[in-house]
Amino acid sequence: MSVVPVPTRLEADDTAVATQLDAATRPDSTLARMRDDGRVQCIACAHRCVIPPGRRGACKVRFNRDGLLHVPWGYAGSLQINPIEQAPFMHAHAGEDVLTLGMLGCNLRCSYCQNWHLSQVLRDVEAPERPTAVSAEEIVATAHGRGIRVLLSSLNEPLITAEWAVELFARAKAAGMTTGIVSSGYATPEVLDFLRPHVDLVKIDLKTLSPQRYRSLGAHLQPVLDTLRMVAERGFWLELVTLVVPGWNDSEDELRGAARAIASVSPDIPWTLWNFHRDYRMRGGSDAGAADVVRAASIGRAEGLRYTYAGVQPGRVGDFENTRCPGCGTAVVERMGYQVTGYALDAAGQCAACATRVPGRWSPQGAVVRPAGLWFERQPQRFV
Image (tube, rainbow, N blue to C red; front, side, top):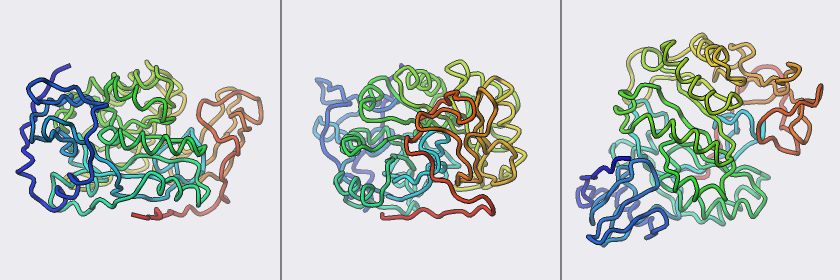
């Protein structure tokens, strides 16, 4: 894999947020390879940046100071409670609320980022979020105090804050919680091995199957495809999501290619096709509607994927909100948007009608089921 130089100088980022973020770091060599000339190679993501002293990595939040890699630590950009289906995880702890930690910064620069206010703070002066100091103990206590059993790192790229994630997740797992990340999937074997003892769930955002378009986002396609296989081989529970952007990544050939790539790893990987809405710097074109995501999810099933979902279009996508038993076809999880309205799995994740196991990480306590009827959108409860 190629090694890329990173030209951004620390001195060039003399802004208030950069100063705050640089203070919220600590030196850590866990995901670093030291060079005799003072340069450091970061191995937290597939950029594998070789960083001279006084320079930043591609993510801009990991940097070399005096020959030591400094990594984000001890803060949150956002801390909120939201439904796990909003992550979106469709085969894990159905219907439950999760505590979601968002940090700041990203190793990609997506022009349509839905969370740009967190991910692009060191690239865009209009990005509003700032770090708030918080300890791992406080975050776990927040979850425990509200009866929450799942902790996620999401909203920006978790790989670039992997050391802090492990500190947090180790405490969460000791408290009996399930942990997970929502990532662009631009990973290395080293970072996945580092995360594996402490992370249960992985959601990867497969953005496109076009190498050219991935380059426009500041990345390459092949490392993402490699990550799918590496995550599955290591025993994480893996799900995928793709934001369906009309005219950008929704051609039939591309969607079929993406489905085949996923199915080649496992046909049991759930794939959620989510509706794009115009945001950040991608304001042209049109939003994706119910027909767009249904079409994409239908292509996934035609290519052999057993679990494809169309969201978020509550009540407008037919059966593509539900999970069906692969044995008898019973709707074992029924949904309306982010809320579960019916649940027919036992504590072992088996269909109540025929005892076929449905792949996933289902809670032994069952799902949180809300009455069927008019869908309502729950706004995240924010602490930071």
